[in-house]
Every structure is written in C-alpha cells, then in structure tokens.
Image (spheres, rainbow, N blue to C red):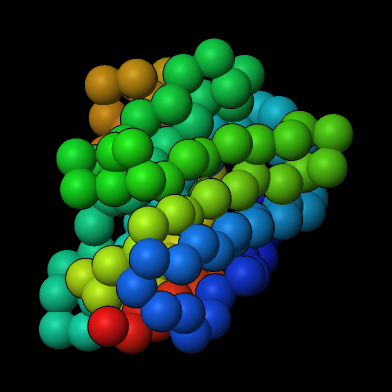
Length: 126
C-alpha cells in the first residue's frame, strides 16, 4: 500500500490542525494505521494508532486528550486531528500501515509498520 500524508503547516500554539493520509494500492481496510513524528535532532516517536476496523485507538501519553486518530475506509484515508498544539509538537509527521497480527501489543513500535508515507511538516510557533 502506498501512503501520502498531507495537511501540515505553520500554526500558533493553541491552534488546531488536521492531517490526512491517503492510501492507494491494496485494500486499505486490511491495514492498521499509525502516526509517528520526528522532531529535528530526535528519534522518530509514536503518536497514535488505530486498528483496521477502527474498534480501538491508541495514543502516546503526551498527545492523549489533544489528538484524535480516525479513519474512513470508504475513502482510503486516515486522519489525525490535532488540537491545543504546543511548540513541542513541531515535527515531521508520518503515517504508516501494517497488517501484523500482533498490532494490539506492538502498535507503538515503528519497526512493526511496513509501509510509510512521506512526512508532512507541522510547525507550531509560541
């Protein structure tokens, strides 16, 4: 599956932004989806994930309550709604897909994902 993330931009602290990840190729509904981010000089880190049936979602502690992951299988698209943005949310955001059977226990691990989109830059000014 090929992935394309979009929706990044420059916003002020406290603003909201919604990222989209459009999939093409194989059936999108077969894949669990994740969002990761990488800030300058830092390792890529887990942000949020959603099961292929959308019956479970997972979040990193520092975005819980502010970010919401969702998906619309009919549109081959996953979303990341980000609210109350902080300067420390500044990063390149990547969407990723996996079909692993161990997703529920390994959703946070980047190595568990086999397809990645090019990132979209989110910059939050103070």
